[in-house]
Length: 341
Image 1 (cartoon, helix red, strand yellow):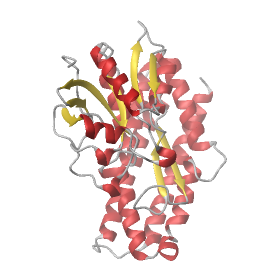
Image 2: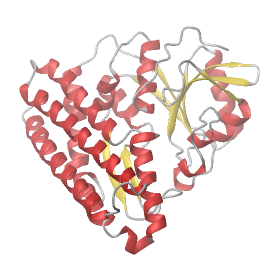
Image 3: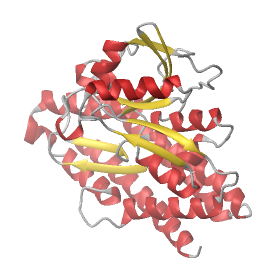
Image 4: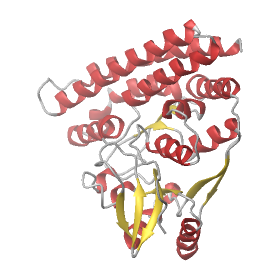
């Protein structure tokens, strides 16, 4: 059960990268950044309580797993299916049955339980990693995993290891063997309408959710909270937490500067559907500047963590506040643009 000629390529984000490769398999070439933007993958949430191992407060940069797929597919009239399973046997049998029909199957998995990721440990737990299974040979599954830390080419994983990763316990975040796959794609796409809908939802998430933990409000909230980390949690836990935040946003994960660069590229691509709209082109460059600022924040955090710079949470808080101001300015302008469409 091996799907020949699956177009495996590395991606920028595990979900949008997996969708990109699946669409390529069905003969549809859409840039990953366009998938990310139309699917409203850009997000920020700061929950002020411990949500994941090895961190004080959870910092999330992404929409919930498979949300990009659902929103992108809805806006592009792509028929897809997702399933979760309370029975592990049914989840395994369903995957095998689809592979036998020549259908590549997306999965969600606990990333640190995937043995081909040597870099991850129990402290890096995240049960929402996306990959695509493209075959099974003897007792091994063949995996198209787009993560940039992996070597070129497909990966392999034993049946038992894949079962453990797919059905890892995670409380509210338990993924219960979730799979996703594409059933059909239309002959034509209405990119302009899909782009507008994707931007509208992203603006709502970043600007209009009333709770203080979400979007731009969440960034300002994080700027204030981080200044009090040592008082709340002590020095050791504070700095291990901040290192984890940076690892998840810039090193092992994607959500910090990477998402800003992706969104900037999305806006540049979107501008071509609106007569090279100058507002979108200008904002494209501005989001890349925000990405640069996020990299500066990451570098300063690591330098302080390693005692190369004096530890000073107020410096980090000021940098986050400045980034929040930049993102607020960008989304105010983007929201005004989309209101005219």
